[in-house]
Amino acid sequence: MGKVIVVTSGKGGVGKTTSTAALGAALARTGQNVAVVDFDVGLRNLDLIMGAERRVVFDLINVVQGVAKLPQALIRDKRIETLYLLPASQTRDKDALTEDGVARVIAELRQRFDWVICDSPAGIERGATLAMRYADEAVIVANPEVSSVRDSDRIIGLLDSKTTKAERGERMAKHLLITRFDPARAARGEMLGIEDVLEILSIPLIGIIPESEEVLRASNIGAPITVCGRDSAPARAYNDAARRIAGETLDMIVPGEKKGFFNRLFGRRAA
Amino acid sequence: MRLRGRSYMAFALAPEPPVAEWLAELDDWLRTSAGFFAGRPVVLDLAAVTLTSSAVSHLVSELAARGIRIMGIEGTDAEKLGPGLPPLMQGGRQTPVEAIEARSRPGGAPAGTLDREPTSLLLQSPVRSGQSVFFPNGDVVIVGSVGSGAEVVAGGSIHVYGTLRGRAMAGTLGNRQARIFCHRMEAELLAIDGYYLTADNMDAHHRAGPVQAWLDGEALMIAGLD
Image (cartoon, rainbow over all chains, first blue to last red; front, side):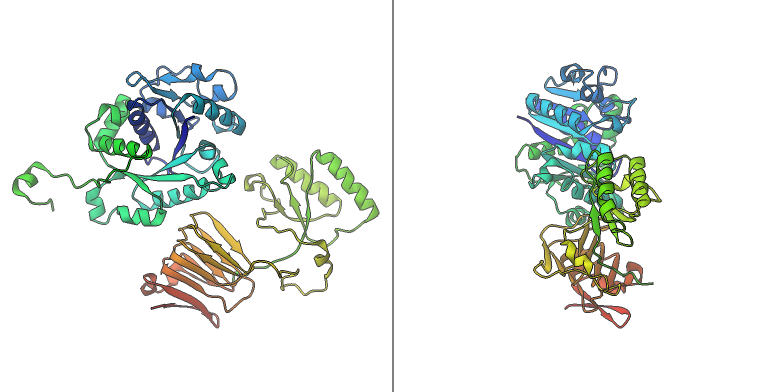
């Protein structure tokens, strides 16, 4: 029986889809069966990030409505054979999702896969609450800035009230993933520091992903950052985060400032 | 302007499906006790039925046609209640109906018996943004922080063993002795018995370190606890 993880944030554009793809690929590379599911009906992006947009035949809505069976809709990744994508519909919207339908699909995914990672849409409405409803654990993605952190706080409150786990009185394990961290800006006080974010959100940290141009390059190529930019700083951070989700204990590496060639030569920090 | 809290007792009508049959039963009952609901506050509990927004409007007007004025609706989503419909009510508690018979009570004082109910609420996890804690019976103690955009409303005092970032409203049923305590004050709004202060008007000095707030006349005073 697999574990269902929802990747959510509240705020849009913080890195949920990027993180879903990166973590999914990292976990699948260890040989486990992983399904990444796009819940952003009408504004789907996970298929683009995974490089599968030209192979979409059936989607989550088709399966929910019984028009297609799950294996018909699942798209196997070309690079990692144990990684599958269940895309969202682009022509419909979230009203086409029903609670019972989603429950059935999640239950079936749980049978077939070791990890089911649900990419939540932004916001706190039906799409987001359905994505989290049947999850066992949550990864909350936040940028180290005030509006993202407050929205994540809101989402954490919803995880403790709108999920079946909360309704049964169980605590849902939550993991914080800080993305787009820029150490120079944090040092200048233009961004919140890691400690500030942890103090406000009070949930365990599983990774700090540095801001990097590699991420945009990877999404334009259509590959998760942990597949096509494997040696980059964000990929290494995502790989560590995936290992922590799987239960390993690793030291947290805080991304440091980039040292330019001349700084290294003369040993001085940039002004 | 003061923000005041009030606690009232109301009748709750809880329709069951099919609604048309329930209305017929209500008509039978009204035939034997005509005018029962006239002038009484009634809340509509929609938890047992699933109605669309227009069906809710229709039901409210059907009840109005029978002389029943609905002052609030519970057991449904706020999205279903458009403008023109009574507001969404939350936190309703069961109460024996006999308590409502004492109608000679002047307005303002809370009616009904509240003894043998708990007088303090203990929360051991942070109050998250958007959450609302409402406890008119007494003090609220929070072991943890209160997030920005969250609110705590208490009939008694509020104690936050953490950082208070949201709104805290104490003494809401007229208790002027209520106080607000916190380990770190970054509140957006404080109020005691309706007298309130927003963050803009709080002395910046008071925002670090443990702090208490109390009412002195009509002024909300804030001072460090160390």
